[in-house]
Length: 111
Length: 349
Image (tube, rainbow over all chains, first blue to last red; front, side, top):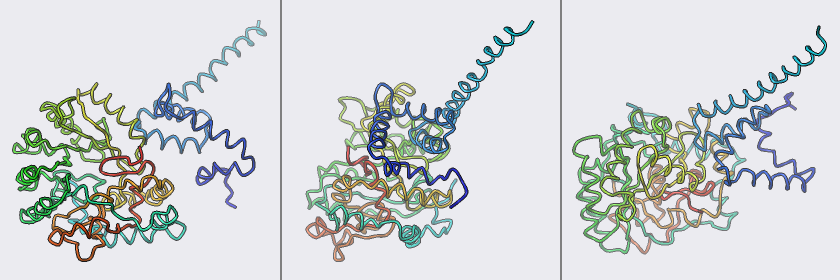
């Protein structure tokens, strides 16, 4: 076996998770399919959200899938990179906003 | 200017080499198109009539698109002659075929294009032209094409792979988007695409890259909104077409390292429901030199119709051709992937 935790070809095997627990997998994939359908948001808009989230959760499979999907649905490279920046800003902001917590603590214990 | 594969003496200019790549490069793990048809109970595939005669008027084009299955361009000289057109007209006169689909290259570059349209209309047939849009602005003598089309109630089908310059120019060449927008506005001006005018203007989307088209319905909605708001352009329908892995697009797939992945996608997305409506089942394609094919793609691969005694327009035998077995190869997966693909767009929605 190759000594890698991640293999690109594993993305195509996602459906195989049903082999060990079919009922839950079926429910998940059914739900997943519903989530990405055109509704109050278009399937195209949802694809860009998924791309940003994929980067935020740093899932290589999801980045592979939604880089392709968002580009195929018509987003430009610049739009896709802006979505990644949104993810970055939220993640960065999430770190920095905890700086307030740090400040609170320092003020609490400092003279 | 990009040169055609033929002028470059590229190995893929030879249809035999293209077929060799398609048949042998994927190994034994991939099913053949025939095997897929058999599994779906649809083998052998046969025609169920001839409703549309598609005439390829020549390979000359003012554009050299990266995905072109015809390998068309300004350096191609093949052109249907007036005498060959006359043979096509004779067939049309003596048959119930109601629709004539004119394609190329840029069909308007054929010096007998207007004469042919006039003759077909005299026979009371409907004419569609696959107009690349930029031809209208390519030379002064083409500026009146919108009026000519209108005069003869020609249905116009035009490629526009994106509503932004970037996507369009990447596939079709620098400046194509800007000229396409101007041409669409000229067509709109004479009534094309306008509600109630009866003048039909349909657009064709095909992917600018190694991927399948998204949902035709969603794309049409977006195109209508964006083209109207950005440029005041209206049109009737959008057809989403899958790029066929032959000729220049095959070259792109191979040279960019996308070939195997693209074929995997096409084969995995095989949709039996699309087979019923494949265009080869009611269309007959005529090459610039009069030879007959099941479709324009088979024409470019030099796969003539299976009816050995009726392979040329001069030997046209309706009874023999109408139920002919269709010649299929691995490229046919391009028409059956996802929602299916034809010159009229998706096949299953």
